[in-house]
Length: 448
Image (cartoon, rainbow, N blue to C red):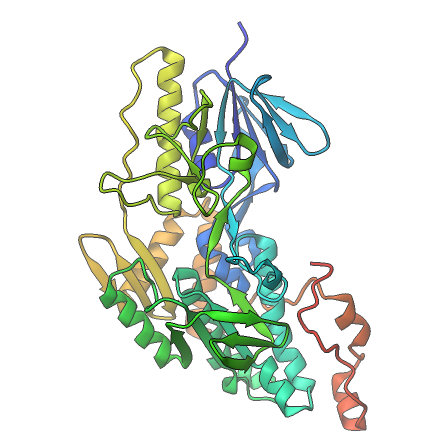
């Protein structure tokens, strides 16, 4: 008898949790992802701000399931589904047959009708995004060091984060810590402590999904670190060297996007009902209407809690959904009565603002300050995969906490414009009075 074929598309929190929970079912499981690694996204901003390296928070998918003979890993891009043939269609013309299918393809950046801003204001969802942002931040200081025009230098030393949710708060806080840290002693022509860090939120307050008291604390903590928080006004323009906030024009060469997300194209593959963010509307058992045996979990779906509020797009929700669908599949394979509808259990929300400052809402208790910061760190280390990663991240944090040094300050994936225009010796050209040779657009990312 042929084994039941289960295909899982997406190796994020939901997909990997589901595959782990299907151990011992006797089914043949195929796990498909565009990348070869599983990523711990909650710490991705620490790669972007030069605290951690990508290898600290990412693990090869094949390594995770090397002891599972029932799991086949496929690196490739899904482009559609064939409902009649029950196959997953891959880029290049290949297809993967399934008896049951779980879509866990996550989400990407949403620019709310301004997709042309993407090149000037990158978001943070992948390792590539984090390395790109790290390059932009560090390169801005490097270019400012040899820039002679004071207006241009001021723009290079202005950093704007758009979006006041957890990612935006964490990015702005960390950029402020870079500016205020010991690397200021390493520059000769600029004082990076004069850099301007902006956090822009169109809503009335930061951390809109947190309690108002925690939102107020986050704002005070950012103010203390010298971050300029602007709320209540949307960004209306974003160019390579300036942004528009309402009617104000702010010279700025480094803009980071943390304002919203949209689902993958899974709803388009299925022709299924979706909300305005493209998330598939699933049943209370996370099954796609009109597609028997096809489930969707994580950020690519929308479903309601008992009180009518949507299940949030966070890692704990995706993991809970993965475990639920795994139990449901087990019951179906065994011919047992199906599980009750999915119920999301809120485990709380966490966000860090910088060293010794964080906010935690565990539903039954809230915390702020240094105690919340230590709790935040312990929770994140606990959920990392493997002892090596836990030790590496803990050591990196300890080093930054004690010495203030960031060990991952590498500028990689340089643009051709920078490489061709940057002279062999900055200092010799400055001493010789040679004209400025740097490109006018430091955000050129043609090879990124």
